[in-house]
Amino acid sequence: MDFIVQNWVLISIAVASAAMLMWPALTRGGGANSLTPMQAVQLINREKALVIDVCAPEEFAAGHVSNAKNVPVAELETRLTQVVKNKTVPVLMVCASGIRSKRAVATARKLGYEKAYSLAGGMGAWRAANLPVSKG
Image 1: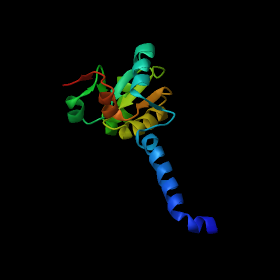
Image 2: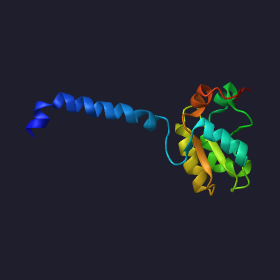
Image 3: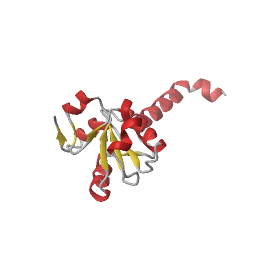
Image 4: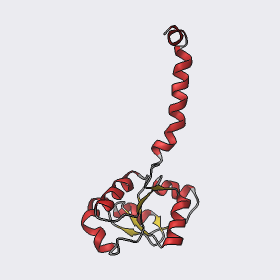
C-alpha cells in the first residue's frame, strides 16, 4: 500500500497512457462486425457486398461510397428487406462516423442478415484512406 501512496503520480501516468493507447480502438468502431476501409474494399470486390449508407439523404448526397444505396437508419427495419432481398449476400453498413452503422448492423442481423458489417470510422475513414467518393 505504501508503494501506491508514494508513487501515485507514476501510477496515474501509467493508467492515462493505457487509456490513450486504447482510445483509437474504442472510438474507431473496432469489433467483430467492423471492417477497416481496406477490408471493406476486399469484401465489396471479392464477395460482391452491397453497400448500404444509413445516413440522412442530405448527408448521402454530400458524399458516399460508389454504388451505395441510401436507407436512413430510422427506416432500416422496414426498408432493408426491400433493398437487399438475398439475405446471404454480405452487407456493408456505412455512416459518417461508424456509430449509426453499428446500430444498423444490429438491426440487419436481427432481420436475418448474418453477413452484416460496419465500416469502422465511417466515411471519415473511407476518405482518409483516399478511396473514391460519389456525390449526388
